[in-house]
Amino acid sequence: MPISASPAPVKPSRKDREILRSLAGRVREIAELPEQALRRQRLSDLNSLKPGKPVILCSPEGAWEEILPPASMQCEEEKLRQWERTLRMRIAWWDQFRDDNTLDPYFNMAWHVSPGNYGVEAAYEHGANRGSYHWTPPLNDIEADFSKLKPPVFSVDREGTRADIALAESLFGDLLPVRMRGSYFWTSGLTWKVILLIGLEALMIAPYDQPEGLHRLMAWLSEQHLRFLTWLETEGLLHQSNKDNYVGSGGVGYTTELPQADWKPGMPVRLRDIWGFAESQETVGVSPEMFAEFILPYQLPLLEKFGLNCYGCCEPLDNRMEYILKVPRLRRVSVSPWCDQEIMAQKLGRNYIFSRKPNPALVCASFNEETIRKDLATTIAIAGKGPLEIILKDTHTVQGEPWRLTRWLEIAHEEAGKYQG
Image 1: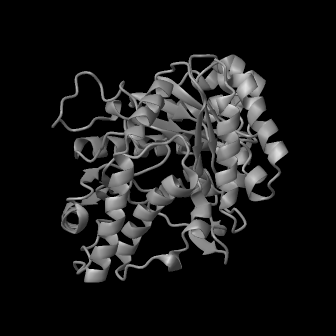
Image 2: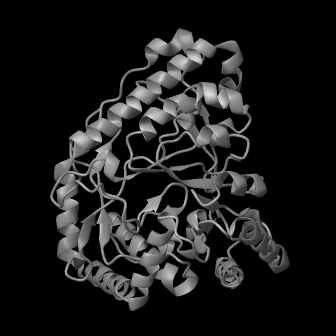
């Protein structure tokens, strides 16, 4: 369905204006520190596969609820509270955590885009905690219910977006200019969409019971996602992702290789000018051969559209690498806690970024410094000769103790400092 009419314009109070201007000014100060230029260069070097000390990154993710509780926001208007939270997160990153990431002197915004739906809705039932939910898949049988699926209708609220841009610029644009950045989807992996439609158990069984139906569904979903990508490009809604953008499953987008050499300022951004990403965490229980037959062939045509690609998240890829390396212009590969790091280092060498994700349980469930240090040292010993980033993520709680993230970073920087090249 098309996007509904934009809500009534926000009329910020003097209090809200002062809060946001103070925060925006502080973000600008941090972003313009001389150190940031060195950080940007280091991230760009990593993405260009240049040798160097391991890059250490930390994404608090769900733990932000404990670091900056929603109730601690001071703005009165809900939209401005969201902007306040964004600004406070950037300041907290620098003041409390300070990994090897960087910060650009802009306030990022994106078009208000709706990707539509597939003509069916999954009934969600959310838990009382910070994320668990149950849903009823709308398709009970792939072949019998396939006719229920409808191509999604995409839409963009240009008027509402421009109103938000104008509001941000009027509030703090002189301190922190607005920049159009952002994306409208996370992954081109498709499998979480399959599970939404048919359920996880059904996906595990379908290669045996309904192989033709699963191929049909994967092909249809791939076609719809390609329609969405093409629509974004045609409508001029894409933004560059080559600066302090989140790319893949935790990386940073800084690169001199994007956009393409033929792109000029003022031209619409094309898919081949930006980073792409896919994963298939939900098929961790599927054999490499079935992954290669039922999943990857429907991801590859999508990834072919992008300038550089990342692959993988929490799933172990060590037994799938012969297939993953078929991804065009692959640059970053996730090495999850459940990967055999020796195999991954052998497969990736110096040709791809070894994007290591330590087990978040080492920080979230417990905190033993000796175990953490050993874990980091092992990764650096195995993969440190190639381009390496170590990203602490999926930290959905720190048990109300944000110092755990700060201390993990201190230990990680110490271990990375021992790197001899």
